[in-house]
Length: 377
Picture 1 (cartoon, rainbow, N blue to C red):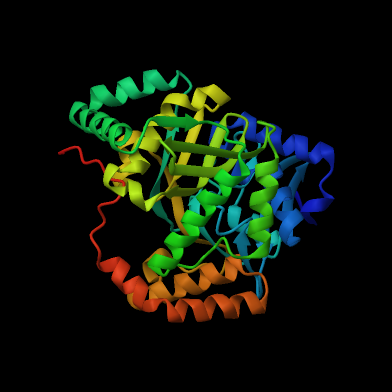
Picture 2: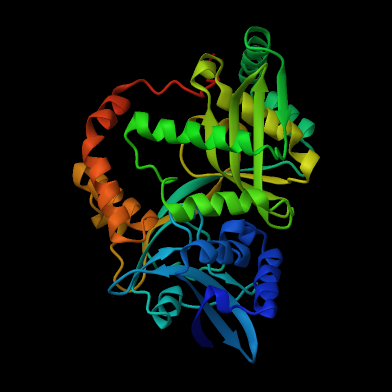
């Protein structure tokens, strides 16, 4: 097996087609975040994407995109928007993933949602984590009925919240594939306001992120592009999600809700509407990624298992990773380093992290009741 590394903008049309074909050949690789189009998108706006390609007998058999850091350290392409990572390979191909990365000069890389169906990293100590994914191939109505049968009390409360929102805020309108630029602006600003209020790092601030979001929004081809879905109640945009889709696979990044609508659990009402109407624009898989399991698990009742930790010859084992306050600080620094490519941006984000510490403490102390419909309600 020959392994080479090239810039993402040096990919040929044949290599792009081959990479996409390998995705289609293995359903686990279906996420747009591990494919060639996402790598090229990030390359257009950051310019520092590298692609590792493995070749056997003159055929490309594996692809992996990443950002180089320093001293053999690397980050997943598009971090922190890369909820999944995968070496997309031929079905059944066996290889030592650590050796493969070393050939590209990667000695250590953090992964948050490693997809590894062929066991390239089976000898690496990683931590299993759940990824919440909904299949609506049989239609949204069928999916919602199966959820109702599994948890009638939860479904009844969901209907109550939906009816209450419709009655008290105004008639509900749900728009799949919303092309209104003003709607995108509202959804992004609501998220920025949330970052500020909670003291979290504003990952939407860097120029490359803003440019990437606008680029995606302008791409309406369902084979690869952005997708904005919105929920209105009367005149209010109460909830919206924006993200990337590739074919029938939709991966929302930005999920925002209007504070005025919080008593109605708008995020949950939104997800139910999205499940019901996703088929209107050809979406078959809604990928909610990891985290916030308290509401995602109500919709994705059969989550997939992915891996988190570090890979590479100099990887730190999960058992020795920093925890507590030091671990939180390290995660914040890693996040800043991933989203801010230059020193000026990192200094700005670092200072913002220091000054927002009191807001973070207040946010952590609040009861986490937003966007939750308990099965016991």
